[in-house]
Picture (cartoon, rainbow, N blue to C red):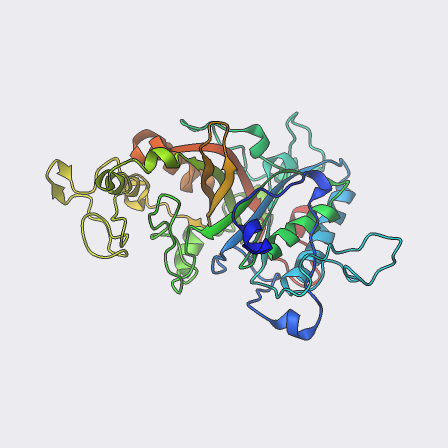
Length: 413
């Protein structure tokens, strides 16, 4: 197995605080132009409707300074570094090998020679940025906190680890090459040393959603196709309705217009128990066939489920199936754009796989598009017997950054 394959296989990256460091791609024209590349700047942040890449490195940070000026300086530095790295350049202007020998490089170098790899870097702001755990307004931002940006409730069935939950800031790095994604987070954490510290991080592989009609539907670790009904980039009207924050959504948070909310949930799967269930039961829990992903009511993967079609013992799609529990028809039409990933982080204390789904979803308002859906899942979804949520966080994702601007600039204006 290659070193990049090993990193991307879900093994947790070591380090906290400033221990992550990110490298660079060579600045030669052939390296900077090779492979897919997505612009960092634009009306919306990249990494939301961008075609979902295969690898993820996600990190949540605590802000350790109480200086508003230092926080703004960090966001400016992060913006510059992210803009460079998504173009296949080094995180800093000097690079990993050309600086003074008596000073640390401004790039760590593990991505030397690698193309951009479709890298996207997406930033979010957590509730703690506006008011910390003691209610303090460290950065004079409390009056601009969106009403919807609050800690998610503790849902039935949650078994949350505080060390894997929350965060003042988040960074989502997605790429086709795990080394490129790890490099991005590592560099941003290095740049933030003394201003932020890594609270928790997660590596992911094998996307579990499709964000474009050009992509095929992937499979989760239960072996089923996942995200068939996901909002796609081509559905512009649906994006406006379900993903992008509207101008009138929150008068105090006009800075978030054109942005979104990001729900992050670390969902452990009891894989060994699931693997012992009969195929028919597995399909009944999901509400779809395992082979094609078609609903049990018939058709192909993209056929709309018929929840009223009778079977031998009730509807052919069980009322407590996952498809039935989360379908928009049963949740006031709410949809979301999912960008989740599989993860395998070794074995737990009992010898079982520490593995599952790192759920990422972008949505217009968590109060209408996520919380009711999760409560319904906890109440009626038979699949919840095989799931355990061990981490949870909510972030406000600012709109895109224009030339000469830094990420989240409107919040601090």
